[in-house]
Length: 445
Image 1 (cartoon, rainbow, N blue to C red):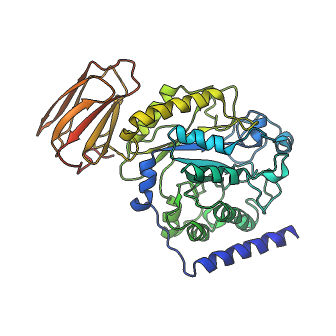
Image 2 (tube, rainbow, N blue to C red):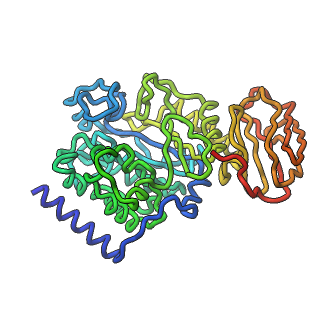
Image 3 (cartoon, one colour):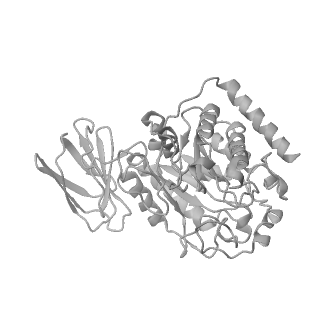
């Protein structure tokens, strides 16, 4: 009976998509126009949360006996982990408070984990009973997150793990039934929560022929328009040795941006990227969900990560893991508050900029916007830089964080000397005003 209901729901959703769009919507990946708001935003909030927070262990990976790869986090017996949801009752959760905090911290978008590899859904999915509706809390957390994000003008993203260790049809019988299952869940997430701006996939197993990516992407674009951004992980970890997809499918799953994890991406101008990193620092490289034994990164470290992403022409997706009560750790709130204060004062050197026109170095890097170039000096001991020649003429220079700067420009290059700045400053920012907008990025990888 349950499988009949799933089939009927799948059929109804497909008919709904068909009614909205009678022709196939072509995929649009890597499009600069639809990426513009995202490139301007620079700073996103990642939130990993769920019943695993009760145990204070890594989400999904701490379940003993989990299949596939990435071992080393296991600490909770499967029979215990799989019952955690029965005690999940975050009575202090306040989505409005979370999103207001995010807004004040300078975040421009939020990506919320709707389902991780353990299969638990943070919304009342009609496809399974393993959802928030079966907990003592019962409320639709995704609904409250979406409403609050929209209220505060934050762009909304859904993280969704294609892997699902507790769904019985996962990787069985060529994965056909599971394809229907997870694509129906994606349809729920893109149909019931208003405007969704990003779908952030994670982890797959199996082979190319086990998936119907063309159907998935056409459905997503039909439900949320071709401006929907999708990351590069819908097929990132698939077995690529047994069969080969079409070039069209390869282009689809390549998505709109790359996702370096727990590291700052390289300076990369031609392809959009976003570093996802945890506000926690754990010895085991985890810390995506609530881990009370892990240390919180300092405000200074988080700021430098953001600046390094911006000067490398990428975005920064900073992750927090709320407590089982629904609260966010006070030291993390403090770090985010300090970042917000800095961004209110100097955010114009980050938001709406591109990385460059010169490649970053160990001392820091550059951002630019129209006829303004901003040198972000993260190593205060560096007081002199020699740069390649610039086509545009520098008409003035100033240290907007306080200090003095002089420059010499010739056909052979530029010399910049900085003095009298605060030696304990996180970021010494030099503003170079040009006679016309930057016309060329001079060093590319």
